Image (cartoon, rainbow, N blue to C red; front, side, top):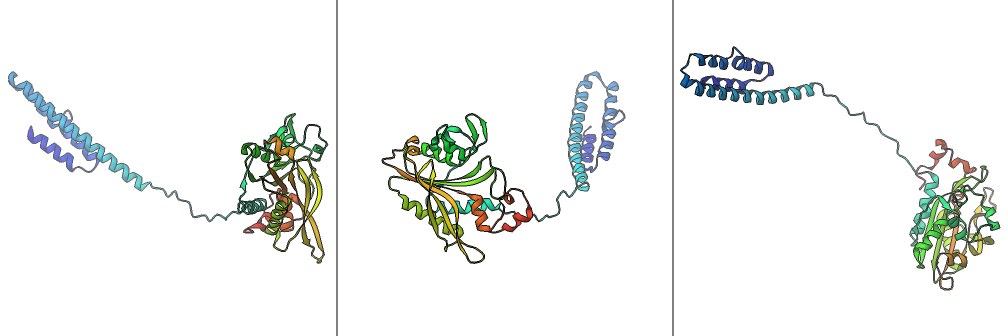
Length: 333
């Protein structure tokens, strides 16, 4: 019995394939195998010895079966690994060199202006494009029925909500959050007005508005930072000119022109933005004391800057996704 067990375990240990392992199982555990032949001896044995003999044979059978199972798992894993190696696929794609992207010219302008004002201590503020009438108009000193609302034909969603016509609502929200403390922000973003699209107008365009509120600010501060901004955007040789104007949310208000030289050498002035000192009513509605705090504000069209900076003849070029047009602005900034 011991000899049969040792021989079986030796063969199982040395076997290297599943077919040979099955042959070993048959040789030892099948009906005609060596273990079964031992069991046949029970009928010729003395009854007093049968129980002990049977238990020993069964124990040997269990040891051989356990060795067969463990070896089968090992050989199956080896067979699987060999199969996977033979069926291995190269799933790697050939190297594809993707073209390097670049920023849209309007985003380039926004980033440039943001960098300038961040360097002056301003922060960038954002707000929702779907606004309430309260923040879009009323907080900007444009009460319901105010005639100046006609200057901004609007896209209303319902009587109290509309697509914002300027980024001024962001200023109103920021002033309320400031709780009467000093404030310096710029507000870039998309705005919407019900204009007919043509070379100089679009129903959707982008603005950058600025706001500075403090207890020690005056009109000369506004003029100084606008001059610096113009020189930063258009070049150090530029100058600005201020003309009286009207905006409901500033008083006094001005239109700002920048000096240009035409291709024939003729000097001209081109309007680029509106600005002014924040109206006391606007400060009061935002919980600022107009007797203690003053502020200046301005708003400039991003498309207008880009048109003048890059000599674009049609605002619609920025929105038609013509790659031939956009490719001109690779690496501009």
